[in-house]
Image 1 (cartoon, rainbow, N blue to C red):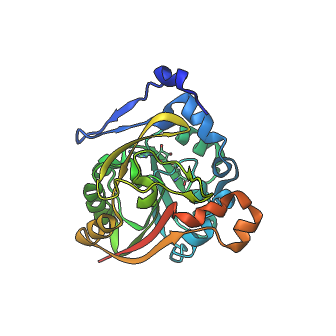
Image 2 (cartoon, rainbow, N blue to C red; image 1 turned 90 degrees about the vertical axis):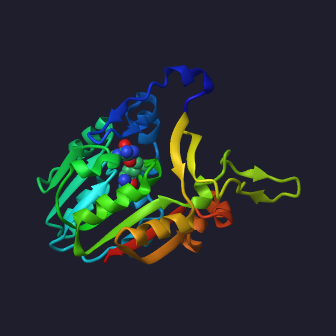
Length: 264
Ligand SMILES: C[S@@+](CC[C@H](N)C(=O)[O-])C[C@H]1O[C@@H](n2cnc3c(N)ncnc32)[C@H](O)[C@@H]1O
């Protein structure tokens, strides 16, 4: 964790894309990267992502699939997909540090890790059976443009499977649990209908992300060539709560939204 005194040291690289778009690149900040690398899911991969079994249930048969992974991070999903019989994976990420770690961890030559900005997906042609993305869409300002670009890269029977930060999680201006005097723990939901930029303190101060409502995600996908087949508001199950008592409060608000949307 960084403390406030290091705020001035946080100089985030900005990637300017061919279309003129630009995305903040906090993952290439050394302190942020070091903090992110300590998270259980960074160290243990899919097995340490508690929502993974629910995500896996949304995936199609991967045998023979050509996959595009948007915001691939350390590439855990990509290596797993090849083990499941996928033919190829193109994995894109904005962060050179994340990509370097992914390449170090990967032996398969069926995975191509590419440096790029999801805001400029138009720069990456190709046709895919599955587009996968975990916890990256909230960094993108223009979700409609991303949906259009994703649809153009999917074949007609293809689908999108994505994990998002849930809109109830992204909405608050100051997103942290409140302990009330009567002993209840509550999640401060405000600003839900005010879409747009949020600046949060997560691992480092000043992390930029974008809030959109549930309806907006649904509508934007439907308007850009997808039909939403599944929406899952993830919560830890009884076994996970027993294994991790500290997750008990997760029943008060969904942290993740999982979705599957098929191309139409
Ligand atoms: C929370 S991590 C998730 C990584 C991986 N999908 C996983 O589930 O382990 C978010 C990833 O999205 C990447 N990212 C953020 N903004 C991006 C952008 N505009 N274009 C491409 N990748 C981006 C980050 O560099 C980071 O690797």
